[in-house]
Image (cartoon, rainbow, N blue to C red; front, side):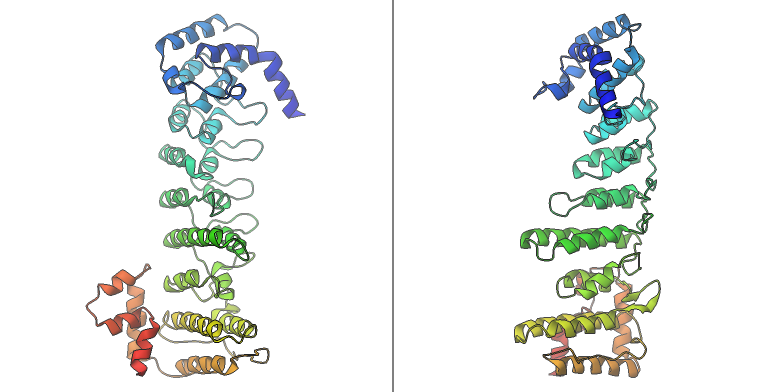
Length: 424
């Protein structure tokens, strides 16, 4: 077994030399002690480094010398002892030496412990910045992307030229690693994701299984159903922030991956995910499948289908009023995204399963059909044009800055009160 074999080699062959090296620095093996004494100060202590050089010169011909100094390099990389690492490399430490147990190199370990200065030293001394470990096949950039605390290492690796779109054997890039390791509650990799996208990460990358960046958002949104309300709120906030970043860098939330698109999920669950759905539609996301068109799925069809299903659950006026308003807003956002309203061909609303408020759903559908049949009004065309010109979203402040009456501003923002005023 490689694990046991590697462990035995450390203990019986070169651990004594490693202990001597660490002892010269005033350290014990960090895995064997609970606290460390100011390692950054100790690493710069000229007297200790002088003792280290003398030890390395004296032991240069001893058995397992290179394994010992190379394994010691892993230990000082973990602690960020740059001057000690320089001394070990100068005296023959192998920069690609792998930990016999974890198979990580010094560069991987420096990233895991968030030691950016050590990362830079190792890369400039010849460490392969894109090297993948033999167990998980993670690159240093992958590891740096997975924890918010490693942001400084992530930035340093990108500055040093790490391949930002390199993928592992599953097709997962550093961006997808950052998303996969985020839970929206304890791990928020928002800044890591932002840095990767601004550095040129492909927002439309997908794994060999067809998972995209939005696949991980969809998974997290599923975790909010029936969960703790406070955690659900944090997850929704994280998903909103990351979705905004992804769309700003060209990701398409309406594109059908192997499972489901984000827009389709939000349409199916518009009662729970309405703020995110509104953002998607306001940001120009297609309300039909952007790959296959409405024959795959249509936002209009999904909204009416879900509206009928939800209104069959309760006759409460407060519940129905909130649901109808959200559905009406979603449909109006769809209509406001294009000069002409086009419903799916031969689309009709099936009210047979709707136990309550069927007349309200019928009236909403009739108004939409009337909008489709009628020529587009100048007011509608102006709204479509102005909303498109004001992207990217959110646009509240942009609209407020326009030299227009408040009623027209509310019209541009699809404020329901503007319609009420016009009717009055």
